Amino acid sequence: MSTRVDQQMQTQVEESDTLDRSIAGLDAISLAQSVPRLRRTRRAWSATWPKLAAIALALGIWQLLVWSGWKPTYVLPPPAEVFQELWQLLLDGSLQSAVSVTLRRAAIGFSIAIAVGVLIGAPVSQIKGLRTAVGSMITGLQTMPSIAWFPLAILLFKISEAAILFVVVLGAAPAIANGLISGADNIPPILRRAAKVLGASGPALYLEVILPGSMPSFVAGLKQGWAFAWRSLMAGELLVIIANKASLGVQLQVARDFNDSTALLAVMIVIFVIGVLVDSLIFGTLERSIRRRRGLIDSAG
Amino acid sequence: MTQALSQAAPAIELLKIQKAYGSGPDQVLALDGVSLTVKSGEFVCLVGASGCGKSTLLNMLVGLDQPSSGLVKVEGRSTLMFQEPALFPWLTVGANIALALKLRGTPRRERPDRVNELLKSVQLEGLANKRPHELSGGMRQRVAIARAFAQDIDVLCMDEPFGALDAMTRDLLHDELERLWIDRSLTVVFVTHNVREAVRLADRVVLLSSRPGRVIDTFEVEIDRPRRIDTPEVAGLAAEITDRLRQEVRRHVNES
Image (cartoon, rainbow over all chains, first blue to last red; front, side, top):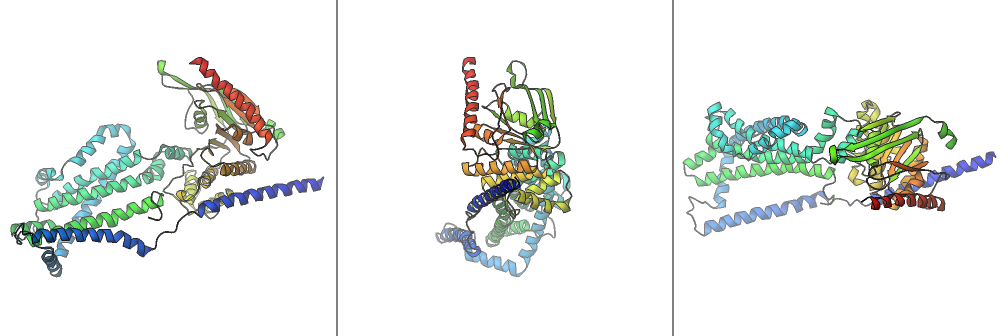
């Protein structure tokens, strides 16, 4: 009798063991599929050369335009001259101080815009009545050209830092709020159900599930918000010129006043490069890492 | 097993459940007078054609939905698993389980050990730092099982949990689920449209009619465990249940 029971237990243990091993085998097969990522240098190079080629092409077209004699060189100087000017601005330090004035404004304005965007976007995305009330208004604000706000901003805040920041925030915050709203809208319903089954509700549901689930769209909103903020800031610095604050906008204005097209183009290049760098280094990196973690990107890419 | 079951207290009691959507002439009756008692430790499969309100019923068992009339009583904690694993893609496998622990109030210090323990129970030890998208469908569904266990449940409701898996993985998960069910003395309510799967797993198969959902038949499965899905006994009973199901489906031709 007891040997039979022993035998039965023995078979059960063996069966359990076979099951473990079968499952482990299947797991091993599916895990082995992941492809190793390309080497860092290879990846960096394959991401860089198309950009370099595009820059070379743009400079080439510019140079051809100069050579064609379409405009006299005091109006349209060749690239080499502009880069020389840029180097000069860098050497005498005026570029650095202008960039720091402008970037400081951008950082402050964009930070306020994030705060405002989140404070508006989060409740609007969750409360139906609020959504109906102001949802389309937010989109409306987003389409409003920022330059149209300046007369009001100057009336409200005089010629001051605050007037510029006001317009930067108004330019960027709606895009950021909209990113958060559409992020909440695009969370798969199954994840909401799963969260509710796990016992998440109220603030916990928002903080643990809806907010992290909204991240891809929120980052897209930040990216768009940055573009609006940077544009509004440049418009602001051209219109609202504050004494002793030689921002990039002021340099642009001064260059125009002196018909100094070389300096004008040099400053424009700086404005362009900063816009692109912030977009790709900060938001692009953020976006890529989010997509990779969520499996939305080919691991080899 | 059967002896023990007949004396066990009911884990789930459904009494004359009615569920209607909409109102007036457009009203749709999803469930019409469903009564069902599931004993503690019992494995019940609900089988029916589409539109039998299976998912509505499961939602009620975990409190995601309320009946229009009737009584739902569930003893202890219950949770629901879906056809999709529904893991949060922004969290690692371990963090997905840790979140379930957090939401039910497990102190932070205890979570890492519990996560490892739970992953071990579904043969996924050491994969806590993987992302859900790095795992196969079967592995993800096992993470979902571990996450369900993190809630310290007594009743596990499953809505076609293996419907999207390949046959080999599904068969292995049947064995795995059976083992976990016995080890943890769970009560399981398992919805499927796969009759063989139902017979492979269940102590009792409950057949539901469509539009509106009603209990039309119940089959006790008296086949010894461990079972296999490809034995003649399982196939025989499955054929009987399928015939009954088809008979029910044909009824709708005369109606329309």
